[in-house]
Length: 233
Image (cartoon, rainbow, N blue to C red):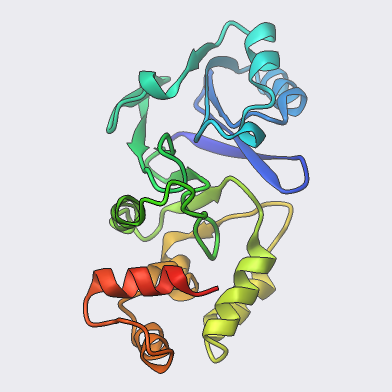
């Protein structure tokens, strides 16, 4: 089974190394020096360098990793939807998830999802493309993954995410439980937890539907609920 190691860099950025027994894939490798040390300590060869999207804060480290290893750079155009990246006889599946950016990608290892700025722990990314329909389809797609999938996001926005979720659902005890268990040293959640705490995955749940009703926002269809939820600030 492929493993995932999380690395912190910048003020709140999170980067990752997906690896097997010998090979590794760096995703958003801003913590390049720490990644190189990890590779050396574990006797791993860096085979590939990729990014969840091309926003500047996810690109630092690429040049260092490529210069100091023999890894290949996998750009967006090299990674088709449902394409596979081979690592030690296993596969990392590429999911194109436009919405936050047009080139947003998620990487699914079979047990974990490196979700970049598409899906955060407790919230989702900003829809910088303006393509609400595309973002909706991307989120719906991620919601179909196994409930035990571990979500590894591109930033640690947990405190702000939970504050917003609590403002929407002050009586949601699952949010309080998640906040208590939150560990800033290892930021993640199970998809099953997201279905309990993340309002952007709960647009069909009664508390969110009732909230939209109270705010006088359209809520008759799932698409209306999504648009209405995305309009709340």
